[in-house]
Image 1: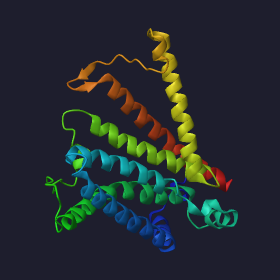
Image 2: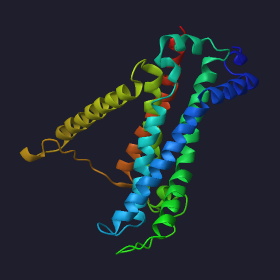
Image 3: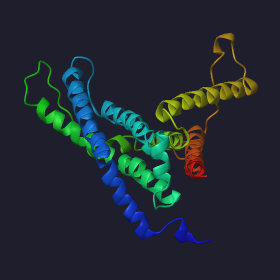
Image 4: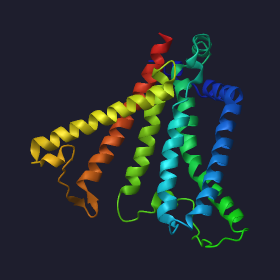
Length: 266
């Protein structure tokens, strides 16, 4: 097999520069919009939190994971924008680059780069928002600890909840990315809809398994009973099972998205 037919460094670099020139404004719009959104959300949270909760890292970190999941799905679900139009799709597929190189460029920019840059943007937006918040006089001023860059990742230090959160973000991003490669129109909305169906089907499947192996009272119709035990130190079998499923799903969807894109050329 001629590997240069699928990947060549110079050709990949040339296409990467072409993509950045073509879609650079779109990428800049994403990052600018994200910074503005995170800043407004951070300032609103700080300005109102003193009247509702004792704002601390236990709120800052989970909010970061949720927002990263949401924005990563948005960015990944809008990958391969040229495929949304028939004429643009033909021009895109005829570009002098292999399908793998086109796939790799979108994967790097939409998933790897964006997932890596979200945490610095999230941290910076909260730092700026807190700096401006501190310039005003408040009835119950907040004194927030100095959250570091990786607080949303390592706020759980004694268990594997962090790995579950990271695996979830990546799996959701790859799922939306696969949907963008498969669907022609309204890829993001269709991907979200399919994910809801898959999640509902998985939930009902687990409910059936629970009823099969455990006794349920009439009021426990949709309850899921799982027996969990410690495997290694603080690692529970249920957490390990979730991580294996998320990693397996991610590894399954990545090549699937490539083959969906390859089918477009055929």
